[in-house]
Image 1 (cartoon, rainbow, N blue to C red):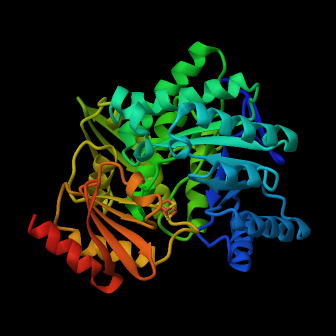
Image 2 (image 1 turned 120 degrees about the vertical axis):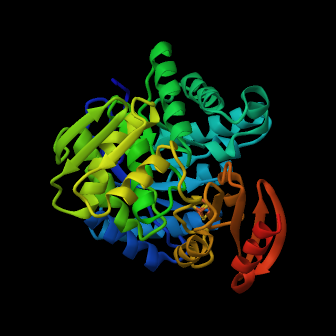
Length: 429
Ligand code: SF4
């Protein structure tokens, strides 16, 4: 899909440019040394753009320091400030880094006030050559939009369109858009609707793709590959982030695989395929387990999502049944275990998210079909966990909130008791 070309420092996104691989630090931005170390590792691993969270105005100074150290070392990977809630932080960060990500669901509830805030941000971005990502998430849709359109892909498209119209009103086009969701079906539909709308409107902004809160391990990789590949295979998407609840360095080879595959630099290792109605049986000659998983997810994810296929079988593979179950679940066609929503963690995370998520998974594995979220922070976690039945949300200071749907049912639970309390609540529901 032909798009506008957006400049983010020394990287171009959109138009005929190759798909750009990006990631996000999970360090505290206030810990400058740890953030610099992680940026070095991410840049060396192949990240072309790196995002850092900026939760307070004071941390804009930390961001500046991180940028200065990296630039002095010759690391010129563009940096992005991830900003929620405060337009003032976004405006301050816009003169420090190459791109600012805003979450429109977090701008002022009064649309006119949000317009004023955004116009001020655009002025600073124009003056500094800074790009903006309008990063809308399924879980943080505003009340006004959900009252009109429900909690749907259409609502996501409509919400973001208002902001793109504001970009045009402000004559500002250095803009990338994302519409992430943890649910692959919702995510794919939202991006498709937006792509169609932008083509009709005649101004096509580049799209940043990602499945948010995808989790970790095989399921995180498969879920991300299903959602992202479905869109890239249709020519939708210009930059990608694979969000894993792991060391962000692990995200890069997965994202690089997806970028290379849809830039036509590599092909599936599928060695045989038999179709029997809506059932596919395939085998592979992949050189690694990760490659097999990604090839399988990309070859069949979209066809399952779009119901062109009802069943897939991975033949000649000891783990065939397990990987086919994972793929069916990632494409939301059959649930054989609980569905987990887990954020990747960032500078707002105040506890051992990876370890806790593994423990929650281990102790809830029997709850087939239930949706359980494990979120890194109380600021964004509750809003971002979308359609979870239960949520484990870190408050900081060793405390946890437990949510049933959108409602907190226990607050300030000590971390070492929180999984027990969660399970008690689920069992006594
Ligand atoms: S929900 Fe997770 S990734 Fe999102 S801001 Fe909070 S800690 Fe960071």
